[in-house]
Image (cartoon, rainbow, N blue to C red):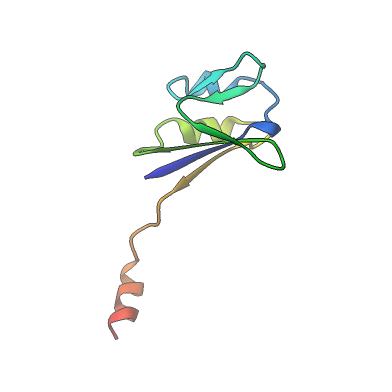
Amino acid sequence: MVKVIHEKWKCIGCGACAGVCSEFWEMGDDGKAKLKGAAYKKTDEGELGELTVDDAKCNKDAAAGCPVQCIHVKEGEEAPKEEEKAEKTE
């Protein structure tokens, strides 16, 4: 599972995310990007959107292309490496 996070208050409305990842991103009526299907909540800093998906798909490209870095893609915990497995069994 992958969590896509949008710190909307940082968005400058450049549209880079919607340009490279229109499956997940669109420009809202307020001129700022919107993560399609995300649950947005108010925080002390501003609106925060979160969406959990099975595959990051183009969201990594959207995050990489964002000039103000307001898009974050957090992947689930990776499986333990072989060395870690060996340490746990000893």
